[in-house]
Structure formats: C-alpha cells, structure tokens
Length: 361
Image (cartoon, rainbow, N blue to C red; front, side):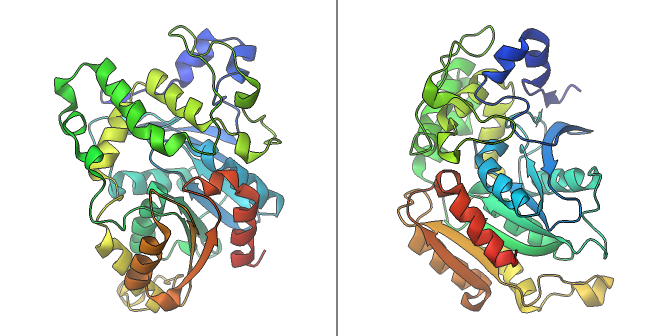
C-alpha cells in the first residue's frame, strides 16, 4: 500500500538467522500469542494470551516504547487468570505506519477496534462482560478518549501516569524540526528524535543495549541488554528500553513519522474535554442508554489512577488534581509508586498486583 510505511518485520525475517532474530532488542516472539493483523491502515502487531474465559484486559503503551513496555504487567495478570492483549500502536515495534492519517484518537480507536474484532475470543457483546482498558502515558490519554466514546465496551479503566492533562507539552516538543521535518535531512530528524526521547527512555529501565549496524540491526549484546525470552521469565527491570527505541528509530521506516504525528495530534496535551466526558459516564450522566439502548458499563465505576512519586515527566500532584477535577474525586482511586515515569516497567509485579486487587482477582 502506497500510503503505508512498513515495520521492520518482513525485512528482519528475510535477512536474519533465528539466532540473530533472538538477539534483537525486540525479538519477534517477545510475548506469547503474537499475531499480525492486516487492515486498510497497514499490518498491526497484537499479542493475546491467557485463559479464554478470564477477565479481559487490553493494554496501550506510551509515545515511543512499544508493547514490551507492558509485558511484565501482562505476564503477571495472565498468571492470575486474565485474558491479556497488548498492542504495538501504529508506527511502533512491528506495526506499520499509515502515513497519510494523523495519529490521533480516531486512528488509535480504530486500531483498538481492529484488534478486538479479529480476536478468536469475543471482546464485545452483552455476554462478554466488557474489558478493562489499561493505558500508560500517551496510552492513558488514548484510553480516556476511547472509553468516553465506547463506555458500553469497557468494564473498567486503569490509567498509569496518563497523558493529556497538561495544557501544552514542553517547548522542545513544539520545536521547528518537529513542526517542519521535511526541511531537514532524515538523518538529522532521526538524531533529533533520539535525543528528544532519551529523557524518557534512559532512566532506571536499563542502559544496556546492542550496538547497531545498518545491515542486520545489531552488533552483539551485553549481559544487561539480553532481552526477555518468549516465556517472559526475566525481571521487567531488565527491559532494554533505550535499545528498543534506538532500534525503532534506525530500522522502522515509519517510526519518526509516527512520533512526529503523535506529538501533534495524539491525546497527550490539553485533553480536558475528553476527561470530563469520561467523568460524565462515570457519574451516569450520559445519554447512551436512552439513545441506543446499550448499557453504560462505566456508570458508578471508579478509575484506578497509578502515578510515580518522583515522575518528572507527568508529575504526580498535577495529574492527581487534574484527574479529580475532570473525572470527579469520588470516581478515582489513586495509588502512588516509588520511582519515576517508568514505574510500570520497573515495578511490573507490584503494579499488576494493584490492578488485580482493583479488578477483584
């Protein structure tokens, strides 16, 4: 498709040996239940595993790090009997980039609907019970927007350091290279994106990584950068986040386009109206039931808000106050974790425990 920039998936499988594929920062079999969904928007990667009759939970990652960022939480909840789905959002990991569409709430909502519609398990309908939607960082803003439009599909909402509650992003996100990328060489834009994302990818998540070359995507690995096995047996703190993002910049044809488009259009700033809309559904003030006959599954439900005590990207006090102002203080449960913006990655087991308790597992 002419308007789709492909992920590295096909290039990797045609050029690398099985051993080389395993050594990538993000192996193709990183999580169980991998499937590649063809669509008019390109091919998207989804992972789905766990008991088919378990509580359904769909995870949405942040701006740059793909599905593996949430693998540790997903693994723990699947072990507790949940049916888990984790997506690579458009332009990240092994999902293609639809380059002629803004990466906004509409595009991401379509991706969620594509993922659940192509599952072998029913995620919708009265018999399904709905599903829990978990969003991290930018994924939190996407989750709020989606739940606001489809409360009949969602049984509960969990937001981890969610985006959307600042009036504007920091100045560097509005710089000329991001607003007018076509006037700069692509090599400069890639370097700029790496530097921009470095602050959110080089924290306690792990600094180890592979050295890359232009032929196969890696040049050896250090012990600290050895990725998760398909069984997800390693500690989530060993996830080579910085290496994964660098790999995306270097080898995903659409990654920089998707990042730039998401910075401009995704629900990561000034989303107060979307949050207030979700608050109306939580209070039972929406018109869905009378207008369509469909149930509002979120009525009188609470949102679980997880924040990092020392998060310098989306600061705890601001997020908690803004969430209370928009959703209603009575409609949120707040749990704070030690650590920064990466707490869902480095404290995956504890975060999964809080989500499990919230869901009554």
